[in-house]
Image (tube, rainbow, N blue to C red; front, side, top):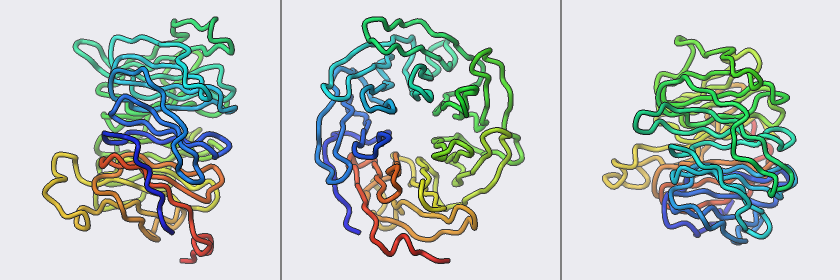
Amino acid sequence: MRPILMKGHERPLTFLKYNRDGDLLFSCAKDHTPTVWFADNGERLGTYRGHNGAVWSCDVSKDSTLLVTGSADQTAKLWNVQTGTQLYTFNFDSPARSVDFSVGDKLAVITTDPFMELTSAIHVKRISRDPSNQIGESALILKGPQGRINRAVWGPLNRTIISAGEDAVIRIWDSETGKLLKESEKETGHKKPITSLVKSSDGSHFLTGSLDKSAKLWDTRTLTLIKTYVTERPVNAVTMSPLLDHVVLGGGQDASAVTTTDHRAGKFEAKFFDKILQEEIGGVKGHFGPINALAFNPDGKSFSSGGEDGYVRLHHFDPDYFNIKI
């Protein structure tokens, strides 16, 4: 399995997202410019210019026409995927961290960071089909959690919003009323900030990664803990195979400690675990720095990783990957 090395970002990667068809890969980095690539050969298709700060996350609509990005410049932007033109800018009073389209792409959830006296917040925006009718007002604003909310995604049928972040608690909110429905328990939950959260392809369960050197698998409706995957280093990124029972964890030590270690000792590899048995089944090395972003192609036949080194590495699996037996 020879990775395709995709060089287009000047700064560390923050987020990777495939479109639903799996033919395009969107990457966000701290260099202000989200980029779209062909997912089969890693060729760069284009960039989305207009942000004035690090871009923390993105999401793409089901029909691959609309891209939403959240940035440290205190805006979230809507883009035309094909032409790269800016369609709309949502302005906030603090950096926009996480963005996620609802099923049906009529809503988007956007989280904003704590800033000065402001607490973190979760905003629900209505997304209009026609950009000229787009309005900036939030349909709902949720406040409450202390510290940064690193990720907020839609629950089943858009009835709930699942959020996780620095206070290590996962919360499920009612997306109509804004009421807090469930919180993860202290005993079973993460002990340190949650860095990433990804849903399974059917939305029935989700995976969280944390600086406490573990990833946990949760039931979406009941918020019961299903599995825990333990590794030796902080987890910055997690993803799940839509095809096989595999979860992938990426991480490494803090960016500040990177220069002092050899890239082999730094353990900058994507680790594969058996989802059910919770055992490590292998790793993919390559990045010269912590892995900050991971994404699985919707067909389950390839995955990509984005690192502190500014590279995106695209891995198409060899046939023997699909026959791994434990």
